[in-house]
Amino acid sequence: MRVLRPFLRSPRRIHTTSGLDTVHRLTEPSSWIRPIPAGSLDGTATQDNTLRDDFLLWPGFFSLEESRQLLAMALWKLDRADSTRRRRRKGGTGTTALGQGDGDGGEGGLQDLFHGEYGFEEGHYDSVIHHYRETLLSSLPPPSSAFPDLPSLMQRIYSILPAIPSPTSPSPTSPSPPSHPRTSPSAAPSGPSDLPAGLPPRNTSTHLLHLAPHGEILPHVDNLDASGSVIVGVSLGSERVLRLRAKGSGKGDAPGGAAAAATSAAGGAGVAAEGAKGWDIRLPSGSVYLQRDTIRYGFEHSILGYEAPESVWDGQRLLAGHRVSIMVRL
Ligand SMILES: O=C(O)CCC(=O)C(=O)O
Image (cartoon, rainbow, N blue to C red; front, side, top):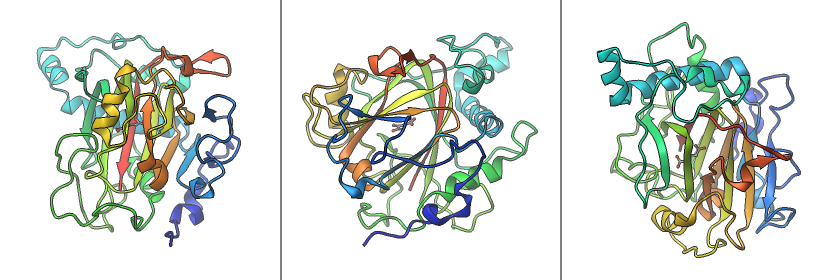
């Protein structure tokens, strides 16, 4: 039996008056979601109603001002974990030029918050993710005028998590600390669920991920040992395309976890694999998506590079720029 999900009945579901805050689904027509191959409406399992709630998108979950606060907090945290920026601060050699890529992204892209050079990880040939910085968010920064509403904004993100992990979640009570969602071990927080507003609920982990304008994330399934059946992503900064592709439907795919997916993705995430079935999802700044169960385990997800043919939407190429995601895993 499926668990009753609080986000379906929560009054917090509606946050703005823009109309973008309504939830979009893979199973319903949406200007933010397009099936692959292009024009197909029967990609693998669109008619399968179990997918109805296994991917949800709120294109306008956060307003521009709210997104600005979240991004300011995320960059503050990421900069503190970025040893190259720490070194530069000490030496006083910081620069105010846009980081690698000179993205624009318009006002909604919040590119004015990105300053100087960043210590991006290149990612090795067999890595899933390229040109990024990442850190765990285990505590909120001290109060600041740059993000006065931070606790309540974080609380809104956590409020869309289901209260109880789905029965399909693998070993949620594993005694060992969870490993990194993609690869290496990490110490994820695991506090009581009645923590003060804005702190991560029990058994969740929250990561901040800064993708450079020239970065991309190749198709993968998150590490099965590192998190359960629900993944929530908040997008801040420049727009990107999220691709969901049925596992094994791409050319050369092998069934398996992230490692197999990463290997099969070596040809590049930007190109639609022959025979791939799934969806491309446009992620504007301030949007929030949730993937769970069938989509979390049966589909690979990737963030396409800007040069990919599919990073064109309604005939216009997305403007390249920096993007930060807040990834919450339950
Ligand atoms: O940034 C995103 O939306 C996706 C991140 C991702 O795929 C990951 O962290 O494994």
